[in-house]
Length: 205
Image 1 (cartoon, helix red, strand yellow):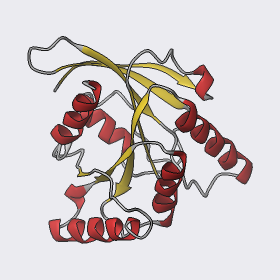
Image 2 (image 1 turned 60 degrees about the horizontal axis):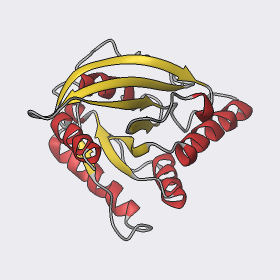
Image 3 (image 1 turned 90 degrees about the horizontal axis):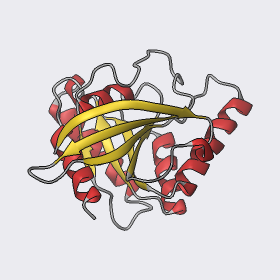
């Protein structure tokens, strides 16, 4: 699948302010500083699409991007890519965290055109409780998802493999079947084709 064009559309403070749900939608979420903006920009081949910040918790709204893609000689497809606020932002007040959590939960549970959520986890780290808890919440809410292990270029391959294996083993304690997962790097574009292939496949359904 080739990305022909991607542009920012709108930032919304609640799911009912989001654009009309008239096309497939894919959301990206993870803990702060997991490399979400860099991954989105890498997928869309546009370094300036999603704003990259070193400040944790910088994304505070539901950010919609319109993507136009084409696969082979098939006609162009339009879909939404969504950049969601991170979870596990300890440096913000409890009331702020709760407001964000409620906004994210409402979006994930009520957005009718949401096809898949890509949950980002840092491949440099051992399994984090915040990631496991969030994924278990997606299961409880029956929201389809995949896992993207980010920043693989900052690891030795053996370390990435070890951390991914440990993460999946931890998930296996509460899941009968493990989700699709990808290993990615925004620097060398590892995982780009595989993630876009999944989106293309889901768009075709």
